[in-house]
Image (cartoon, rainbow, N blue to C red):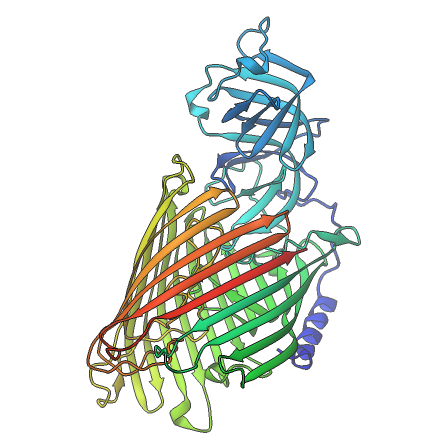
Length: 600
């Protein structure tokens, strides 16, 4: 989006701000709020990334912080033991007490994994807690098994990718789901921008002007090599793309109900064909997001968002894009309804130019990170040439969730699509389902996953009804299972749109460290109806239209996050083996991608 196209939207937003209610000072509490600085006790279960809150209560001010939980491991040499994500440092002044016998004491050498401890102390650094007093329960109440209890101050408020409130206590992100018990009122979060599944960084934790202005950014280098995507080794068709990207984002918190958010990007890219005769260099400066947000409209659980904003959901099966829009959302407990009108100003890609979108989404969050969603997406494309118009209407559903303490996860997305494609009617259906199982108790926390994606095909292209399923054109089909790296889960080489395809996926991964993962993924591709076209794939050879077996793909994905706190690394390698639908002498295609990212 060019800057001049965003100015009118920003002007409208500023007008709306000027007419809104007066600012609420940051230290003015509201009934049921837990603003930054509030002292709370939060009880929950640690899943390796989040504390899933069971109970949240307000506490009176105190001099010391507290951690209550079960000992996981003990290191006598370093005088430490671990409780959930915390390393507990035992100092010379640490006082041990026994919970059942006040005349009995303990020392570090006596502690055992599985004992429950209540610790008062202070933080030496992030997640390292120096204990001043430790009360030991050698026979803890079974009802407390697995619970981690934190008592301290709210350090930040966020939303996760599903819109679930999060408070940060002791440096730990604690998710406040619909099942969290809150005795003294309903949790009401400060207005925060949406944090997506694969876009949690930067955290905008550089703050100015009494924490009202938050600034963050990233610098990213990416190198992609497409090797033999035309499936013919004898022709020079390899391509290398290199790009440097820098982004800067800022959040201006007007009060607890309203904020302005902007994100600008700069990109310098180079594309080189194999013969080195075709070299394209490009530099671009643009505005990725710029919007105004307000919640609590008319003292109701209604929010409004105006400007250029990010549209993102779950596995990015319906959409992952920035649109110029007006978006309204009603949210009450586990239920939410979102309605929006959007378009693309400036110079959008040709496939989605001249579009207007109306989206209605309803969600029911049954539990933390578990929800059912319904989508109505009406896309109207109006061009001078009717054959170039594609105006689909989607009736979609979604079910994403987890069981077994988060070790079993599933994702189901599907839609029926009608409308018009040129002069043809559209009537098609598609579904994409995956399931993943983690074995957290085993070394390196291995996980297995599998899925099947199917999009209908058109058996008779001449009957006036196009039965080829298609996605919205805004999709990315990008997510992750239990790893730290997100990637194109339908194949990093082919990157197909789900249309006239049946894709079976199986894979496995490991987490040798908390911030490291390796995934190995295998895909098989078959057309539902034999055709000479693969819609929006990176493969550059057409199938023969006689055979349905397109081939197989094997992908390896490595990810490392928070290296030295601020760096992320991601490596993807994929190999596509052509099947009978291509010529008998078709050769494999390769894809490699290296991404280096610095966040601040």
